Image (cartoon, rainbow over all chains, first blue to last red; front, side, top):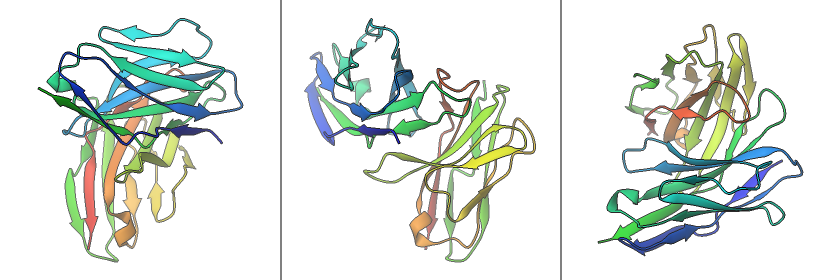
Length: 116
Length: 113
């Protein structure tokens, strides 16, 4: 079974600075997808960024980028120019590309606070 | 732009009561999911469905039941509520498996006393 580990329960960053959130995963598969979801205090889960394992290029979405190390099974999220609205809980998630009924497996999440 | 709609948003139950969390999506997605979120534990999959009439268990199905009679609706039934079912419940849907992004409802906070 696949597992997703987020070992840091909390992190803090100064506004306008850069922060990196760590995530590791365990799988025996070669084809899969990785996601970072954001959950603000409103509880709504919002997709931040997605990475296909077969792509070597790291995904980027504006101020958000990932460092995907397939051999090391590492998938970290970098937030540049942090803003107060980035304060939230962030979840790393894994999804197999095999099978029609693949499920999303989440890590425990990390709470990010942004200092003004 | 309704997306995934869950009701109710909040509910307090007594031990032994039953209730149904409603979930409906208007995106014509085949895949639907129910997760529960406990503090410090991330999201755990309860049940999922890959299409009308097809459901399967996730990681933590005990104490719950689901049905999927239409593409749009995926209700979660709690029978004989227990304090261990106090949690926030999320319904989600996706168009496909694999690459498909999951779209989440706003969550339902359930307290069992």
